Amino acid sequence: MRLETSLGLAAFKSMMKPIVSGFKPMPLNDKALDYLESQIPELAQAAIRQAYWAALATGNSVLISDQGFLYEVFPDGSRRQGRAITPPTPVTIGTKFNCS
Image: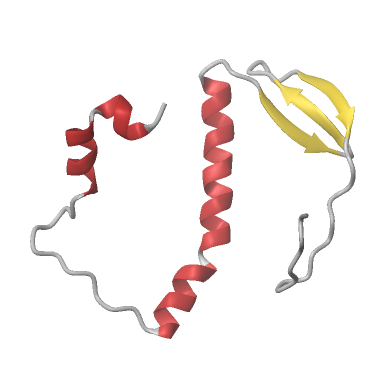
């Protein structure tokens, strides 16, 4: 379920307003933008870790890959091995792939 439908559209819109009225974001220069972009991997890792534990805390299982296999991890800590998967593809930064 999408957040805006579970909360109601009015509540969702009020959440998206700036906290301080009259707040205007400062323009970003290249240095500031580079710094913010450098934080994305760490933020993504934290979000994935939080989602993993949140799923287990609500009684759901999660899928992980480990040693070339998929595993289903359960809230009690047990794991069930699934199918074998192909190893990750090493990628050099800036490489473009065609997925057709």
